[in-house]
Image (tube, rainbow, N blue to C red; front, side, top):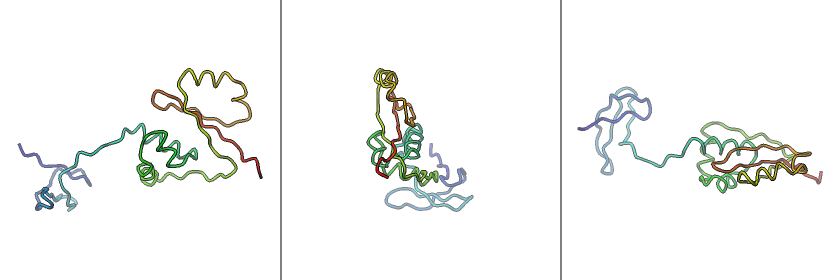
Length: 141
């Protein structure tokens, strides 16, 4: 059973063989004339992590910090930012700090009233843990 692949550009199934390059069969789409090889089975990243990475980027966390937090390459994060045309807000009056806590630690953190006063804060789920992002204003102005 020799199934023809679907065009990765226009999703048409009308493709014809178009030579061999590097030992791999090439195809040409009859609809859009796009040349391609057989689809590689690559490593795909769960959309959950894409959304979390973009949220963290918008909150002002750097690519390298996102890489450390989520375990996803900073290059992947940059590519997603470019792909989805995300623009981080430019505000230099504050800087984000973050903590990753389990449920028990989160409850203790929120029980302390000092942690809740005079601060902007966001709590987001991060797999089986929680991340608190706080904004601290620069003191020397």
